[in-house]
Length: 334
Image (cartoon, rainbow, N blue to C red; front, top):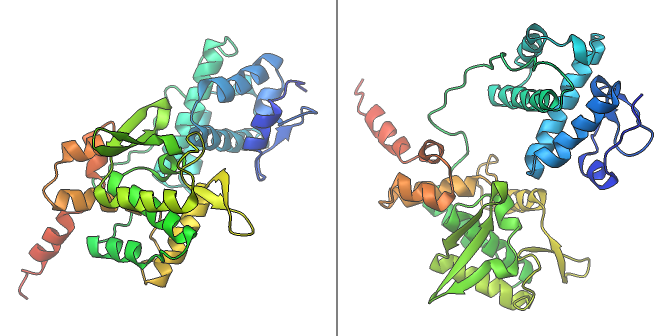
């Protein structure tokens, strides 16, 4: 067995909840059995996840994908050197019975990237996943639930402003709606990332791949964020998170919120006013883009505000055609 193990901090971050067969390394995170038979393969495996993938969410998703593939291989007594394109193709076919097509494509991407890394490191002579094609997936309209402008306004206005927590929640939702930002980027804002430039206030988001994306603050978002900062007394704490948790006694802490915390808040506050159960954090990104386009905005500008790499991604959030489609359908006078 390989004695190579991951960094303890990295292990704690990626500790799996179960499933998959592994070979114990004695310390830290266990190396999946498929790679544990060779010290070189084990080392290259951990280098891939610690050095090659900078995004935390991608790292966790790819790690879970590889653990699942490892379990499939070990169950069939396959070792690293036996892997061929036909076996990887069979695995991808099996995945389609239980996972959505986007998830299957993500699993294949994880396998393909890892084995590319092993080939470059001279662990394997070829990538067994290189020639394997994933299932086709064509989508013209996103599945993210969208609120109407009235529903979004009702939700924000329903939040109590007599408590510091209410002011925080209102400001957080306003930032997501009026900047089209991902919840992950919003919760990682620091106080200094809300800054004044000229006469306007701006938000500086830390996007995927280490990119910085600056968006001017809508006047309503500015008012709500100012109210939260004043009530929390955090204006001078530039390096600390803008949106934070509360302690047991209701005091504002220095700890940032997690996405799960925001989702829980959205569900609770949405249920109070009768919003659909499907309402989630991403809803506000789609809602903001749709409202912008309904008021004469362009796809190109919406793409710039949302920091999308392609206008095709932005169009997935555009639900302005839904009303038009319904109007046309109602013309069928039978």
